[in-house]
Length: 302
Ligand SMILES: NC(=O)c1ccc[n+]([C@@H]2O[C@H](COP(=O)([O-])OP(=O)(O)OC[C@H]3O[C@@H](n4cnc5c(N)ncnc54)[C@H](OP(=O)(O)O)[C@@H]3O)[C@@H](O)[C@H]2O)c1
Image 1: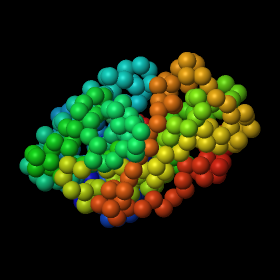
Image 2: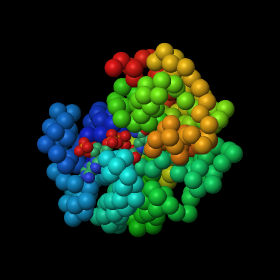
Image 3: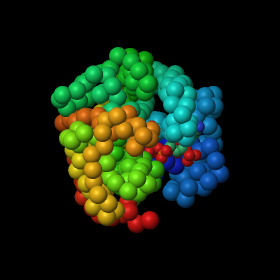
Image 4: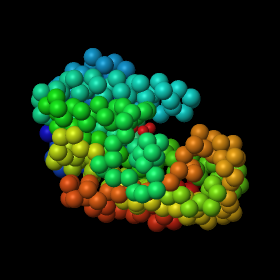
């Protein structure tokens, strides 16, 4: 297949591109800068120059492809406080790609996150692929993709856990937590730290995207989750141990001050099942788990 990949130059895209090429697909990566275009060409992909906000250009590229994987997200806007702007741009891009593919039966694999399930009220049990939330930030885009199944698109959404980890991860939540621990001199968790975060190795996540592109049924939600739920205290402990810093509880009231923009997330309990994804796609994680990857040391080399 000739596959348009948005966000191909990003953390997860940089694993999805070789995964697709290795399976015999051609990749066209969306690139908004010379440096991203050069990185994509060096990786063996063709380039479609354009910005997520240029919906006409994005639609043309989607219509020219045999399938689309959507990974681009305006994280810079999100980090600078314009979260809703990033959310709106993602929804608009999703709808533009969906309209371009309508009636084609082509695959469209998009991206969401497991944390949205907590905000949608899925608590006290592992979230599953069959849990759907009515609406909200990112959830609206997820639901729009699923609904494309009724418009002749083989659509699916990959929900990613908050920790997608590997040597390719330079600015995700993992490096952010490490940076906070360095700055504060302590690796923190909230309360007793028994709340669980799911995780996946980047290379395992990339395989979910390829398998979804090739085989997912229309309108499926998928969980690229290897570690179903690692107690946050253990994550903080591994980070503290690697940095030679103490690990300690942070009071709930101090979470925003301590963890900055991660404050609203660090105390969430987000256990996630990926049983159906494994069954539907024949997927099995094959790379290091979160704690083993943290103990590998590469996150702490600089
Ligand atoms: N990494 C995680 O742990 C994690 C966890 C849960 C969900 N997710 C989601 O997974 C997706 C991929 O994440 P990631 O970690 O790979 O992100 P990333 O490393 O920040 O990469 C973002 C990608 O989006 C592109 N992009 C940003 N703004 C753009 C714009 N205006 N026009 C065109 N392209 C634009 C970037 O291009 P440039 O190269 O030009 O910057 C880059 O290729 C996102 O939806 C993210 O929210 C990630």
